[in-house]
Length: 304
Image (cartoon, rainbow, N blue to C red; front, side, top):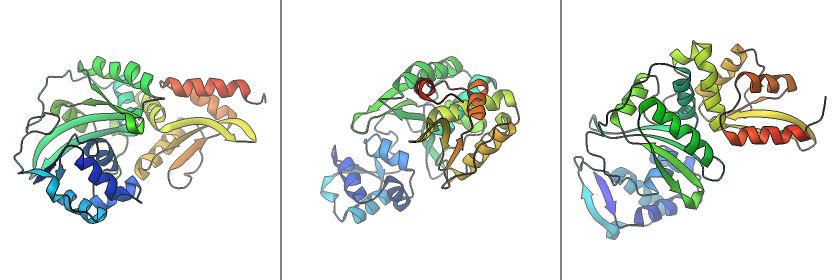
């Protein structure tokens, strides 16, 4: 059963339930992916389940029953986005394993989400979503990632903006696309709960591993000085998926780089000048914001 509330009330309920909590904490309370709550339920792209509705009312200490327009059974068929119950069967090209596909795998492992709404062993909705900051990642998503997806699949993703939180997404609703990525090693659902890792066909081939790491660092990496009083450049990578973080570290070592140990359970660094230079030469960035940041810091870094 899914609950259809008056327009704006689903967002209001979620915001009230979140009050005093982090998104991660709320996601644990609801047993739902935090990205799905923020980007799909809060923006009212999908109706909430009856179970999630009851929990949200309990957390918010408010009753929104008077705002319910309709209770939809499990055969309600269409999401607010207009997808049919069997998912879109839009025809896509199915590319062979390649450097470009490996890089897209890395991008999805970083800031992407493979979604299948499942109920009673039936899938109702399929989507691939890649998120970014609308201020810093717009050029990367629109002029690099979106064309990359079209080149590989001959499918043009949609662009969605969440202006109130400075986020944007490129979204593809396609059953064939989701099933393709499932077959290539990306699981649907929460990456942390699924213990998602780099697919074996990528991990075992340096020609694929390098662009995959580029996609990961483009989305979940950053470039900065080591400290305020130390203007040596450092490249960092952050992930809250322990299995993936450990694998990224291992992969860098396999490429003869020397990353730090895992810090605070979610971050690794490439800090030595020689390793930073090797990273740029071997892996580099496709996300322009990192390249600009690196070149800017380089002009102010100490000459050693």
